[in-house]
Image (cartoon, rainbow, N blue to C red):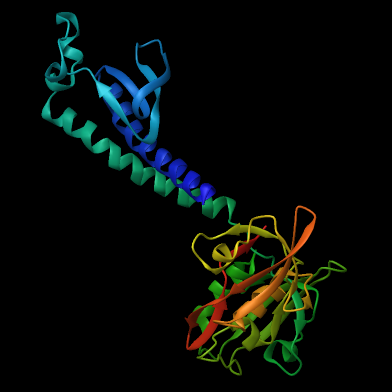
Amino acid sequence: MLSTTLYFILALLLLVTVHEYGHFQVARWCGVKVLRFSFGFGKILFSWHDKKGTEYAWSLFPLGGYVKMLDENEGDVAPEEKHLAFNNQSLLVRTAIVLAGPLFNFLFAFVALWLVSVIGIYSLAPIVETVIPHSVADKAGLTAKQEITGLNDQKINSWRDFQYALMPMIGSDETIVLQVKSTVTGQQQTIHLPLAEWKLDSKKPDPLKSLGIEPFIPHIPPIIGEVTPDLPGDKAGLQANDKIVLVDGIFLNDWLFLVDYVKAHPNQELTLEIKRKGQLQEVKVKTGQQDNQGTMEGFIGVRSQ
């Protein structure tokens, strides 16, 4: 709960800071004197000044921030500085300063999305664990331990890339060209995958399994990294860094087994044996349930490290 609140405060402070920085920067560009740029509201905890006389302050309550400009409507202004006051600027300049805040938020969002697309979000490499016998992929010659590096002329870096490239081809009878590389020998190969036999289950539309591909998934230790507040795991007393040893008496050595087990037991009480700070203890947790395309699945609201 504390970490969630902290992340919320940091995110809010970042967004408000970007917003206020827009007002601040455009005001300076337009020749308006900025008296203070504050991170947060309330009593100033500490501050410093730059060469232009602007005070940068860190205030008591970090839920926001503000920019204070020289303005005759808010106090006396020395005659030699009247031309620097906000209220003495043209309508165009004042409008630009006011609109700069939301504009900078928009630009920030655009840059953030661009960085995400360039740097990438963590996702699994498209390595084949097994190929289902007699499937479309098997008949085409795809084998285990091969990494898919391209689909037609598109570069593939993750299973997400592969699925995004594949989805527009549902129902097509064309033959796609896969570039693959052996993770054992490094040998590259081109595979022609006919889609005419590709049958996607409408109830469980998993394009990988319907092609006969089981993706390689690395081993994830059954250690809790985050507990979502007010969900079953939190109500049962589970905590971050708890290692789950047993679930209903079944030895657990992989996080994904726990995920599958919980999904298969909606609205049921599970008995977990956990290891916390070197001590074993038993925790009973009643799973929640949610509808996943017509199938009820259990959940407890915890994530792995």
